[in-house]
Image 1 (cartoon, rainbow, N blue to C red):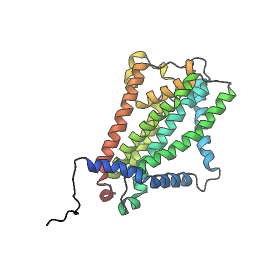
Image 2 (cartoon, rainbow, N blue to C red):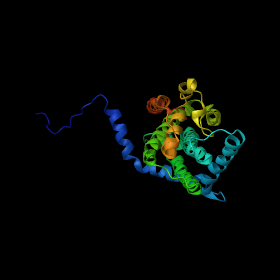
Image 3 (cartoon, rainbow, N blue to C red):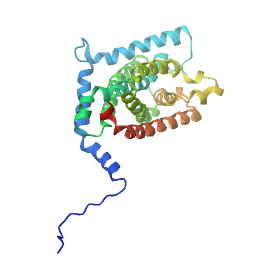
Image 4 (cartoon, rainbow, N blue to C red):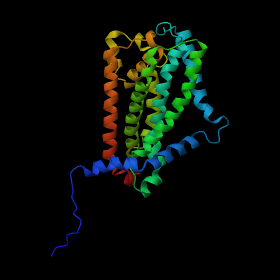
Length: 278
């Protein structure tokens, strides 16, 4: 007589993928540990520590204001003070740039961990994005200080800022996943990423308003996904002083979504060979 207590194994299509996303939650403590470790190490043995998160964007804002606002005489948006125009773009840009740098090296830095134990590898680059997000939040104090200095009071649009922060997070995560996966297989990307960051700074509307771009070139210019992110931040922070070009913004945000989704797809595709290649 057959044993009625024998467990039955059922194999279903898609179960492995479903289990992977459940494992992300199960290993959340590892995510917290990696993020907190990187935050502590980031400014370890520096004299002024986390104050670098304030000094770097502040000095960059001063340089951009002098070069683009005072010397080049480029216009602001409406009556908004030029330093606030610049810093409202520096916030998302530096978050994006720092996330790319941190993510691209995250798997290489944690190579010993990857080769020894199982956990969803997606945890490593996303924890690196969180570290950059902490710098982003600290740098936001400068924006509050500038608003107080210039007596600039944002309108109701500032309530939409969390939405644009989420979009910036998606852009940073998607691009970071692409570079993290590519850097494992092609170590040339350790040299390419700094170039991407430097070049991207000049082709993004950080030191100037994107409204100065001629109308016939706006859609082409918006193929840079950070254009939509930066314009969204300025629209939320500057309020009525900023006008959002809807077709350009829609194109940029569509590209952000594409980068985010394709970044997850490519990372998951390459994840199975990380331990062998690294």
